[in-house]
Length: 406
Image (tube, rainbow, N blue to C red; front, top):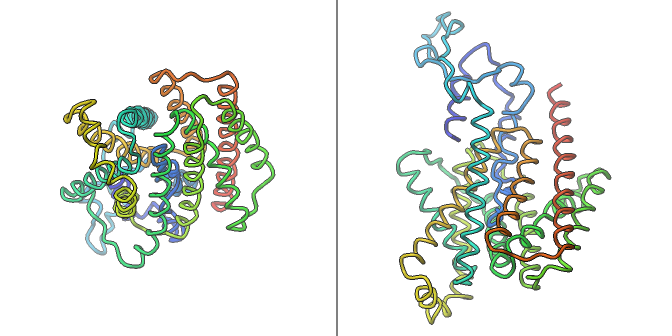
């Protein structure tokens, strides 16, 4: 999907009747992280695409080109001095052009499906194999293997990386690794629904970092919209039946880690497509995660950890569970990237909120987690607060974009 969007935009640049977007828009379009996301995740909270290529939603492009379709090869490269460029023929609209809403809906469905399956399978593994550091390494290892195979077959083509870009990506990858590991520590320690409720506080940390670290002014309306989030998480935490401090503190560290990932991502601007960016970040994060996994869990795993898991479920199921949880982790993050690049910020915000609702709801049903009335009410208030915050922030971003376009 990434390569198709890029190649389509590249072909259109040769047509004289479509104005090439300004250089500033192109350079700012590839902010590395998101959701990033954060998303993103959540076993990784990756929403890699939340801030990528905002020019695809730009009113300027919407006004000048309603449908972006690839040109015929012969028409896209006319002879020098020829006037045939203005008469280039456009290929007939395909299924994806005729039914964009249906295709976007399919992407959302796939994103939610993969995310729910990942969270359920991840928690099932922790029920018989409680080693989150090692499992976090497996998540990234399977994803990196997937990226290497994709590069080998040219889908997508590997983009070269230089030392300057590497220096920019290392802080992003370190924060991503820390956030990913601590998320999994929380998933292993408490109920999936409770971890996701705590992680609903991520917008609060993002706003605080923007205000007090980056020096950006946060409107009072945004701060007020975060009040229900804080109140809801507090209510849910006080009566959560699976509560323990390891799970709670790990989820909070994850929120902080992903907040700093977002800060460093704003400094890492590149023209590289998000699929390649995500691959390089995954590789660096894997290298970062291996040492603590070996030091903290290695001796126990070799002594009885692997043997206990194999004795409980068998070697084939144990290996297949680890493989598939890693594959679902990578795929749901990649599909999230492709999905969020297709929609406007407001749709993206609503999609993220609904994703968390789906994960919490399905995890309660599948694992039969008992929750108190206060925990249920607190979770609902927190999710509603996130929805309100996301709505207000998306509207503000859209107004800024329209002002710049004008």
